[in-house]
Image (cartoon, rainbow, N blue to C red):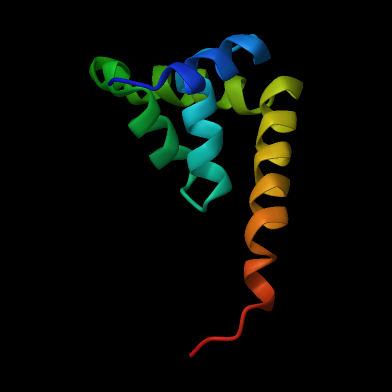
Length: 89
């Protein structure tokens, strides 16, 4: 996966991997934890389900991940508004 220099620098500034940021971004826009992990970490597809579940669970319960996810959700909300208040057409 090729990522922009800006994205890579942002992840480095946060002190996390690009995949960590990708997973948080995907979850912020509505992907399930499992789907976001599978997309962000495709190289782990060869691991057992138990290994992947353990890695994913340990990752999402960290304070750093929770803060990144909350910050990303807030940034989205600030830019486009709260999706729950948008009327359907």
